[in-house]
Amino acid sequence: MFKSIGTTLITGFITLLPVVLTIYLLYWMAVSSEEIMGAALQYVLPEMVYFPGMGTVAGLILVFCVGLLMKALLVRQLFAFGENVLYHLPIIKTVYRAIRDLFDFFSPKKESFGRVVIVKIANVEIIGFVTQEDPQRLPEAFRDRDCVLVYLPMSYMIGGYTLLVPTTDVRPCKMSMDEAMRFALTAGITGKDTKTVKPRVENA
Image 1 (cartoon, one colour):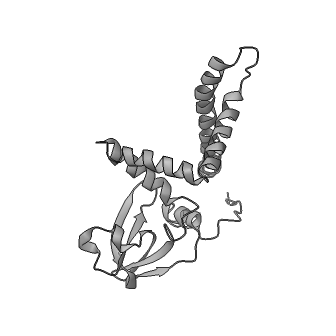
Image 2 (tube, helix red, strand yellow):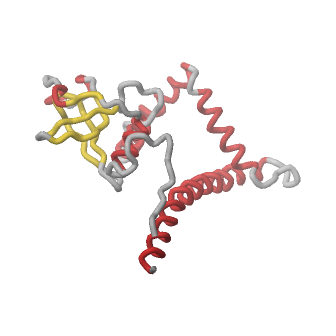
Image 3 (cartoon, one colour):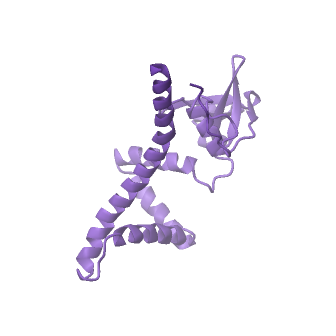
């Protein structure tokens, strides 16, 4: 009896936790946007005009406008100039470049960057993500090799390994970026097909 109750509680916890964490993340983003943008709007607008939630809406509009502006060549050149200045500042250049590279890894505009592959290491195959294929962007000591940089994520934690792998040990994997990342981070528990999730029924 107690085993059945415990199993039911664990099933309910596993079912609700992803939903709760997703809702909390969206809530945190909305509250943060409201606090920052709301304070700015209250400083500019009359008190009778402002209403709760306007900061969140303004934050979404601001992000959308930045995305539109980045389509203009002049804006991209100005942004690149600003980034170049940051890249020459001590400490800041290291932190900013790491964050920029991480977000570029998941950018939808990247075609080959971050493609999913299967890496063979000592008769073991591992799912990875190609992060660099251009030899000219590799360290000078690695440029004369027929290799690519591959990121191998760890399961159930933030972290992983970046390996220089010969192209002969890398083959394409027919999985989307999101699907492969979920598969790797959950140690394959999610399976490959995550489009249709069927509820699990536990036997008492």
